[in-house]
Length: 113
Image (cartoon, rainbow, N blue to C red; front, side, top):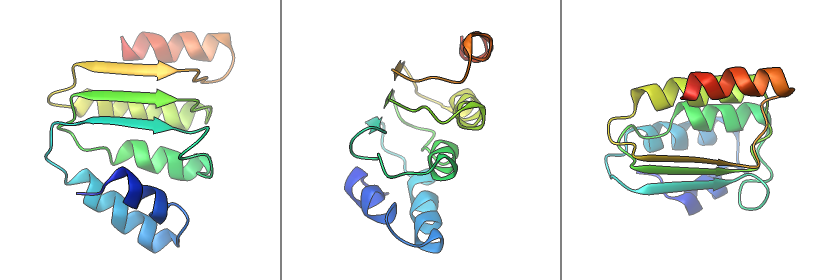
């Protein structure tokens, strides 16, 4: 499975290597916690790559922390769809993350709940 460090490395690489890393990530079976800080460790990710990352999170994680993910509705839609597939998720934290305007944020929050 892909580690946080290897994901960070792949995020600076070609689209082909990035997608290969995401496929490896999605096949992970560990019941670990995952944290993504889009203002520091993953600050160089584009909205497209951040959305791809959410779509490839392993379905076995127990806790997901996301910081400063201000990538809009596509990102949030990918996250909502993936959260719906998680098998072991106990905790989801979204810190300083915006979906858009107040109405968009309320709609996304309602779908996550």
